[in-house]
Image (cartoon, rainbow, N blue to C red):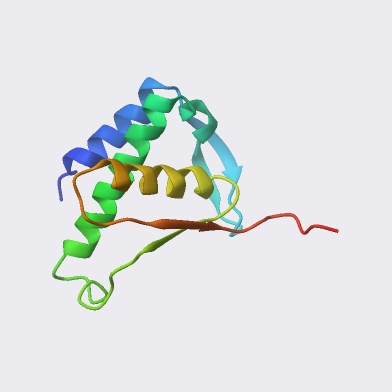
Length: 117
């Protein structure tokens, strides 16, 4: 299956900003990954805007997929950003949605990795 344009654009965004690097790193699930994504390399406004637009396109594409059994009855209005890296993704998606011509607006929720004492 060929990549969609938003997928190609995402890969180019990572490469252009040196945000993806070959590294053997353990994932939180215990598996090893041969590359690592440094989202902190995308923290310029223009890059965050593009990140949100691309992830929003991916979400809309997934929801429009007729083979997706969830898409029939699923109409999200909250984006959950898992700390730490998921927070800027969810936030940039919500901003991209509000900035677009869509009638859809998202709220953002996130968790804390470290419990407060």
